[in-house]
Length: 202
Image (tube, one colour):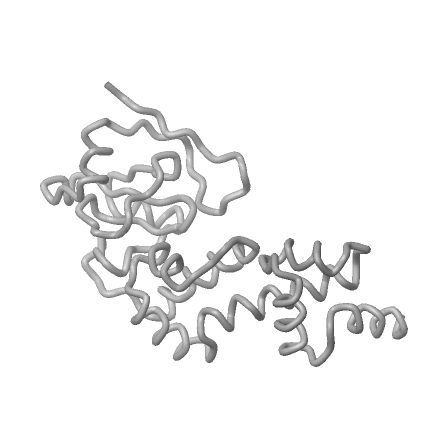
């Protein structure tokens, strides 16, 4: 029996051609079967990370998986080695690891994001991710996410007529009062005042 990977239709920098996955390969992935290590590798298209079958990271969604015969194939398509299972046999530089996280935030900041979610995506522990992220970027993951959300909110306030509540939802902060608090903390003004100031300057 063969199962076929169906590509996501949304734009994805790590999308590859549809690749048939043997049922044994899929079972090896979801059961972390080390007997398949070296026989194939799998990439997760939503994160751009590739792993050994035995990787203990959270099991990927079936439709997001693509198969590689060797690490070189994955690297050629710009997938990054998993920090946890080290499919290339080498330690992943912290800068490269954190770039996986910042790339993910860039594409998913409007969704609910927690440290645990980011740790699962990047195949690391929450504690270690928090510490290394702060050292590399100068911000905690939460601070980085909020900065990204506020930057996007500024753009929407300047270029659209959306309400403050709608803009908050679009950047991932559904609670209007909390959105106003976060925005004021980063800019020194409320969203409504910011919009007025920008209009007065134009």
